[in-house]
Length: 286
Image 1: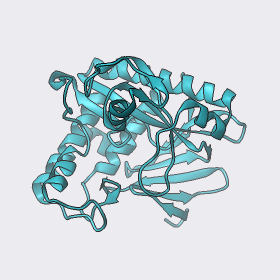
Image 2: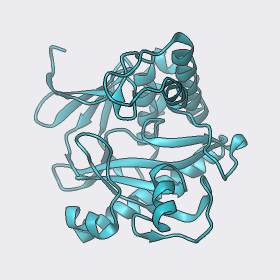
Image 3: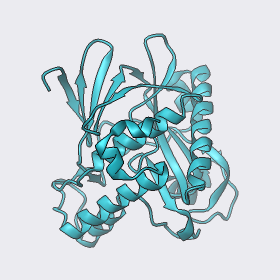
Image 4: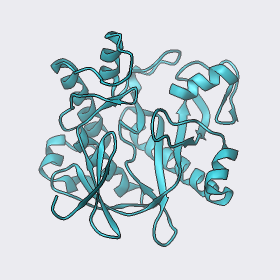
């Protein structure tokens, strides 16, 4: 990209500098599982992540400012304001799943929240909870309690972060419930802009940052089908792969099934045919 300087690569995104104030985030079609980027890509995955993030950014400005400046015509590139990102992941859980379920089984708590006894995997929590995590450069993020998060960002700022994160989760959950989708949990990334204003960045409420479950298949007491990497995880598990690099190649049926799940999530959440987004990415901003 002649107008941009490459700053770095993540598991999914490439990061470029446009100028002192603007960045360009390009979402690739790479997919990772068990923290390993696989050699096989999922066509249009990056466009789904970019389009869904744009959709949510446009609808949550009343809750919190965000970094979005423009969606480019390729449907996978976001021009964004540069932020000083906070050193925590802002996770909200409405249901008991993933690492939260594991923590609860071990201690009866999730990130310092004491939960009622006798909850089952995938049970809905009495109320959504804010469960921050550290940002790991390699490997898994680490769940932390509120006191540790306050040490990292300050108690006053953390209070605002918690309020915004819970408000975003409640807003999105109401929207998705009407479309037959449960948000079990989700992760937000917040930072400070040049004026010190808390701002939502990175991606928001996508299948990569959230656990989306089809409501008509929800049944507590077990793991749930989800609109994300389920096909990929199941396939990789079936191989007996040791979950260290290099990852396995994916067969065509797994690629097709995963793409279909991502596209279905996009269409159900936005109400917009994916083909319309490919033709004009700005349709998600209306």
